[in-house]
Length: 240
Image 1 (cartoon, helix red, strand yellow):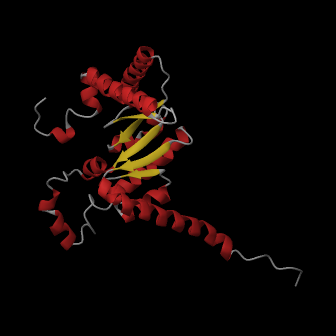
Image 2 (cartoon, helix red, strand yellow):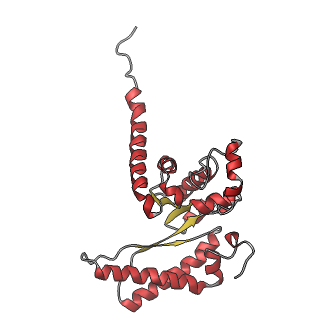
Image 3 (tube, rainbow, N blue to C red):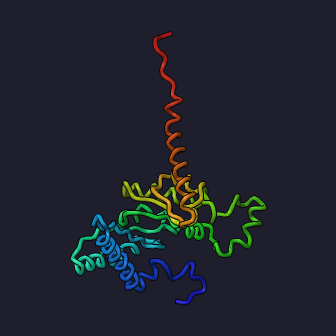
């Protein structure tokens, strides 16, 4: 598995395609943990497990791994004599996946936009190495800020918007969110609200900021929806 450029190499769903036992092992761990959590819960309710397949580029990848996950879920339920509720989704981390979102949504129940990798693959740069030239780019006004800190709304954001529209056109009510450091950035959260995403996920230390920013974005969106109604004038009564 040694590679010259592992960021774009044999990882994510590609590793699970070539070694399906990895997918089976991870899915089994999720399902067994969900059932155990249900047994320990005071309510006795088993949580709904969400299995997210990373780095998908084609429908065929998700179809192959979805079959592995479903077989594993069935095996775990038979072994433990318990029913399990679960959803299968994917991370949208590649431009091709964003453009193919309509087809991918037909076989998945949720999308999580992995904005760290989506930024890397859209810009064609590594966040581990970008610090060597991004300061110069900012100084020359090529970029307004670090795209790994605050979401590039014109480029990466456009792909998210396209994927959201195409995904929900194919599967109305498709659950959408982002995961990555952008999930704790107020400007990025505001963008997610405007695009219609359902949630953001971020590092634990960013959660307080993310919750506040999400609330502020929701209030702004509600006010913007009310504004046209408030400014609408009534038709004149009577004739000239």
